[in-house]
Length: 239
Image (cartoon, rainbow, N blue to C red):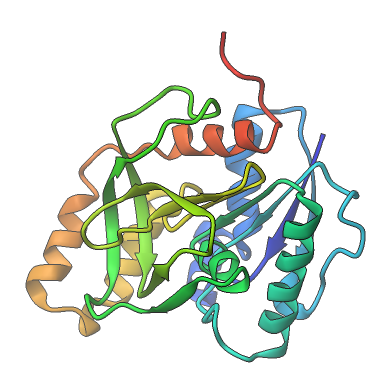
């Protein structure tokens, strides 16, 4: 099976040596550990590359980005139109962080900058629904996060799957073919720590320390990557 990844950003140059250049690489590393049989093809949506054939891959994933999902930058506008095509075709699609927001925006939801500021470190979310692909099941899921924007209003027909007081629409589903999550299951703790440290000057001291302290918690990144693969039909359900 083949997963198509739409890469929407590149890492800052100071992080490339330790963490790689593109976010698709983080996903591929995490997914391969769970499903060595998978094939991957990557498009740089950031550079205007988009698939023309929705059947070229068995499922699709849109990565995170520092860009706004609601801006009028040409590549973002084109990607929103691609999401609408994918939705109409009912292909399997997952979105992470910016990808989560862009899917919501493209399908009629609302995305904006939160008046609560940055969400960094480990985000703990109550699971609000149970789906067959959520194996193993959890009451709460803890995922690394790095965002200011968030989904303020879901698209028509969207259903909340997980959330907390800071980010109520942390995870949502659309029909049986789309799932989107605000957090970053592909991130390592070290990379999230590097992002927090980079933003220290823009954070109140108590929030900076709280974000760093949150990294001492265990995270459910591997579980979430498995959920995404099962949703996309690329990992068999557990007996």
